Image (cartoon, one colour):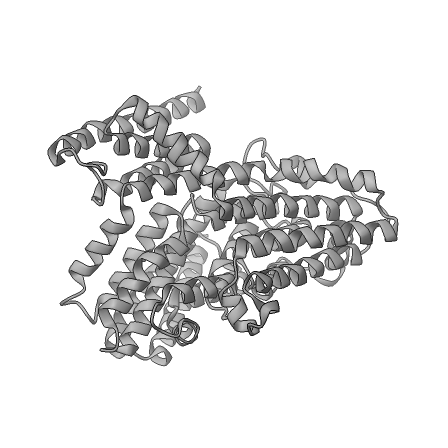
Length: 539
């Protein structure tokens, strides 16, 4: 009875939030006057739809309906609360536009192929064989978690690729050591975007380089790495959490439950059946290694191919100019073909069994595809309402008299924008050109620090946001309930964000990474020692 009342309360609260926002927004709409653009264009209201979706997801613990309500609010704002205009914009300007986008479709194809390869590796027995091998050589929870971190750091090419590959490889191993799925999802997420944003050869480096007009983008990216405090401190905190054996917030509850055998801490988890899937007794560790290595090599070749490597460009230039969507889709397809041929030669699976993994792989990726599609549609809503223009104008208006505090301000703006829109790359595209314009040749050091703050804030917001594609991928890779992943990761990300903000304030005045970064590391470790001390005292 209490559970039913709790659910009813959540639904009523969600409805009341929407009901409160609608009349306020209607008054704002009437006040602005008619124009070819929506009346709320480039105003604060452009950020309301994603905020509504995120708040509802955290309140109701239900991500699909929360995202759809956020999309609906965006459509209502855009159409001036016209029913016909709302429906037209939500579907024609939202869902259909998102699904017709070639970049998005490339990512969806990559997801389906990767899900199929995971199904192939599981059915061939490669994942089970690797789990058995790892359980003989890695006999502690600390060792398994550190191995997950090392693998995540090694796969620095792309965050999508990182999330799903690390999850499929390490999931059987962490399960045997009773590491919760929420903790696995955090380790995957914390070694995806934070590692990619400090790796010079990655799809993220290519994206950042492309947003720096009139400058050597890759050189600026490399110079900005020591100032990327959020990414660096996230890695420090992740390793310290594992070595010190300390967890706090909702994650502590998940880890305690995992030690008792409950890896999910969720009634009737969607991924429970997948966790106990049977495997081929003929499987060997090589049946996992060959597909993974093929995937890495083929995806790298696919990315540099799209960047013109085979037309004369050097490796770094080709990677900077690459199209991650096409490269990953083409690369994963060739890796899929190589995997099937390898299994047929090894005779661990016949051709019919290989083909039956296609629908299984697609089925496994349906939750991620649904959430991604809705997240892309929600982003289309915020774009149509002029969120980029609003943030750009706000940033330029405060840039004048706050030069020393600007890195910290940019970090906060990047956090909020990426959190609200669920996209790091979109945040780069908005903020980095503003930073280059404001500083130009007048203060190169502060420009580097501010670009780093932009990248760090974007990754932080992306790390915290329930509608971020990387967060969604981490949940899919760990086969963890998405809301559980967000709620357990949020306290960790917020703690590192606060420390990073303090460090950027210092960096604005000191302007030396070799002073600021050690201060950030000391603050991070000091915080964790304090948490551990308080937990011991409480127990």
